[in-house]
Amino acid sequence: MSSNMQQTINVWDPLIRIFHWSLVGFFTLAYLTEGEDKWMNIHSYAGYSILTLLVFRLLWGVIGTHHARFNHFITRPSIAWTYLKQLFSGNAKDYIGHNPAGALMIVALITSIAVAGFSGMALYATDGQGPLATSFFATWPEGALKEVHEFFANFSLFLIATHIGGVIVSSLLHKENLIRAMVTGKKQRPIIQQDEHQ
Image (tube, rainbow, N blue to C red; front, side, top):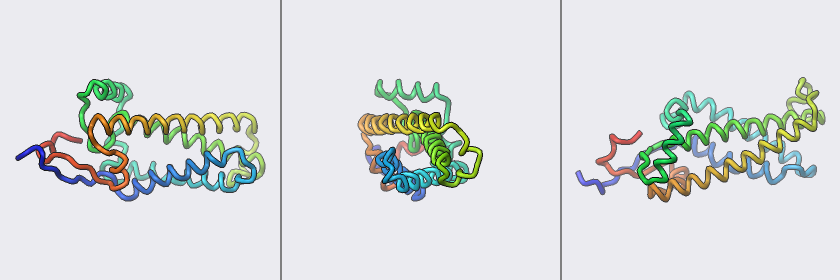
């Protein structure tokens, strides 16, 4: 069968796509309203939305569709590093779902954004606000919480920029529009190569 015959593969389910673009929107909103008292309500609700999305992603990573499950794509950092070297040498393996570097980035992003969000809630609690206001988190030192919150918010932004760069590089080297795939949920692959991909 000719290798130029293409098949459409459903990769990203609707919930994963909604999660991804909602996280983009709420993180952008939270970051842009950071440190502005007049926007604190918007900032805090954006943060709550982000944490809710992360809880969903953790659950969906266990019970969700094939390509969404953590046990399908999370691997060792050494494998991600090997993949990156192969990517830039032009002979990286093609992955239908997340490649090893992308998988490592997902873990890093979820962790960093979660710490930023939770430290933000704890910081809000020191002012007697939010769901943690009556918890022992409200007694934590405000200055330290603020530093942690700001560091992980900025670190998350750095990871996001790196992620976008990786998506662009991978799209160019594999000749595939990964951003469009996260919108449509679909990828195109030659039929003859069907059994070679994960």
